[in-house]
Length: 464
Image 1 (tube, rainbow, N blue to C red):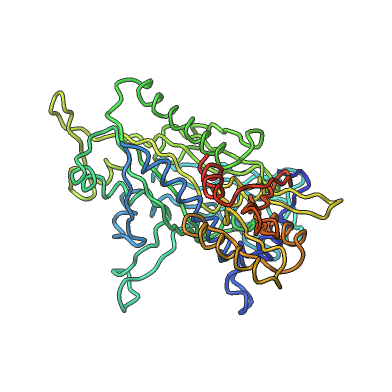
Image 2 (image 1 turned 30 degrees about the vertical axis):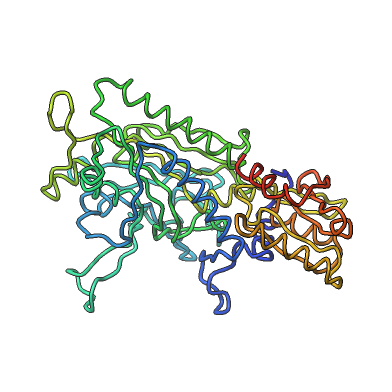
């Protein structure tokens, strides 16, 4: 990643080149709503396909499912989301701006549990530099007491908006996998250890979303619930936890995230989610600071136990040695698709101010286009015909771009800016010896190559 990168540059490139557009822009937009353009949709799809291939198709112990966005509301009561899925909300008494209290600069928030009711609240304190970001009002007395703001997006099922018809858009993909645990295990004849994977949309009514696509109310997740037998010792679950920790680092390396921008945060016990016995947050150095990218949690048997009690159904496995039933424990690695997309863009961004060149050094397997085909001149039918033939042949196996506008140098720079790893130029020599010029995006070096070897060359680069 270029150290000179700013979010302004990333957002500008994303909009100008068709990666990410502001949502509903012709109507003035909608706060923190974003649409993925043609290149963004392809990059996002490539990320998801690579993840699915790596963690589902290439493994014998993980299967995939696709569950509903809106589930029976009892699911969210059993999971604890209705009662505890909240952030601390405060309001400035002077300008009435509202903020998530634990993100206010200069303030600190302590979560307080009420021993009588079992509920919880927050206590807000401030330092000398604490003030309202909007109007500048100073100190804790300038804000209301923190109150719980539930982040679940509520809707209604059916024509009447009444309490009996309340439902929620899922705030995570995980619960669908827990609810379907027994159906998956029985239909696929699986016994722990095994995993269930899912990719899909989730929705959270965030108090203060922001930083482009990093924190939005609508987002995508890639999650795995990996079920294991009841651990006899801590070392049993810790060994599986460590395997997933390593697997997540390998994933980050393979999608081009530099190791020196990745940090592990062991979440303190008093800050763990209600379901977790241990959580590691993988943080990444974005241009706007170090922020959470992924998570890895040991959820114990919390979810299956709660859903078993609430539903009256036995969500169990059977020990093949003793024939005894038990409720499996679960380790959950979770990835955010949109945050992955943003991290990949930031890591790939480079610029050469002297040459006025910007390029995205995307791994070839992630790049929206694997190659671009150029006829040297657009007004020479023989070059167009030959180039079109190459383009059509490669298009059968790869996503490729066609460009016959402007001079070659500008076409190179245009493809560099969207991360196309190879540009293939058809010139007059091509008509003589069936070779083309292949230019490498990152080094800008060129080599002559037989047309017959292009597909093999790209296949090795993309899959290697």
